[in-house]
Length: 182
Image (tube, rainbow, N blue to C red; front, side, top):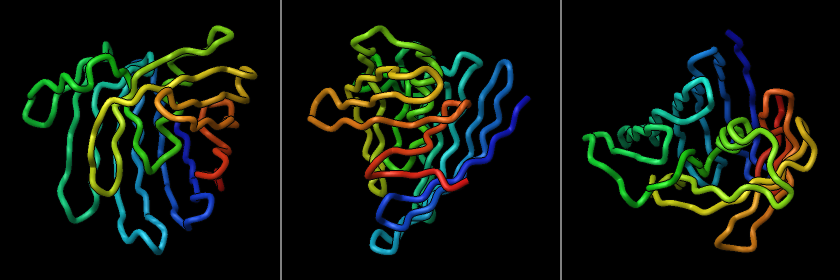
């Protein structure tokens, strides 16, 4: 079992995140807390549980003081809410993408390994904070340099960033949004 502690700061907004990642042979668990910058005024926490192949099985998240949300996944693109009700609007999404963290970029990076030259098109279960709205989001990941650099692209806008990662697949630099500080 491997334990990794990481911290990120928002590029311009003063937000801070503290993550503890536990990597086991059969289960990967990420526990984190996020404190927004002074203008946003919220704090949040999340917990993501994946199987040993980095396929998401459980996502718990909350804006502190407003109640917890829970999503269950089967690792094959099927999701259910906290009551066990199917969420067909997320069909095909393997990974969650939480707007407050660069960690969720690690999930497809680790799961995909290297990609073909044009990258790999995927669907994500995108969660915005602090409103906790959830919808399916089309994205593309392209490995530019194994173990070092990836390109993230939104497939429904012109947003694209080159991500620098460490040996564990954790984002070191996400220009304009996050930078790793520990």
